[in-house]
Length: 182
View 1: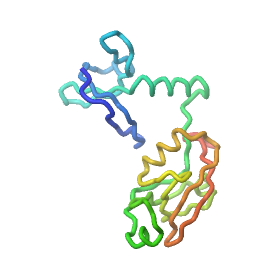
View 2: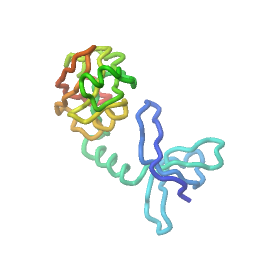
View 3: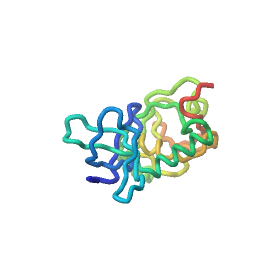
View 4: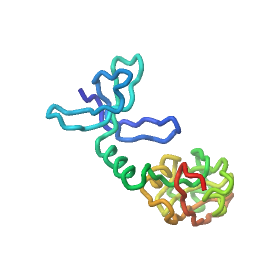
């Protein structure tokens, strides 16, 4: 029985996995990766996780997501996602700055650190910068960056809108492929 649609889980790396199907099909060790089927025998998801000791609550990735992952693996041999090379956290913006600069955001992503030689570091992003937009799409949390980069072609330039102290700046960044060391 499907008990919820559109749930979200965090992966071990912290990436948000969205549109998860919550169900009550019994999953035991070794069953993850098996199909979740509907009453007509059509695959609607791929079982991926359970909550131990939670009365049989299981989770499946939708078949549409599995198809996208499969196409990435067939095309590239792996799933390709863009990478900026920052560690960030949500930060409430200063009310005065929001009004003075006529910002739509009330939150931004504060850059806590950068990997040396990363795309963001090469573009001039610095620790303490507040990322407010990527290609004019509002950024208010790290997940907003992940969403955008998951669908953006690796190696294609993006523009980050950044608040550095009290000055708005834009930076052109070319995302690299996540997990690939040059």
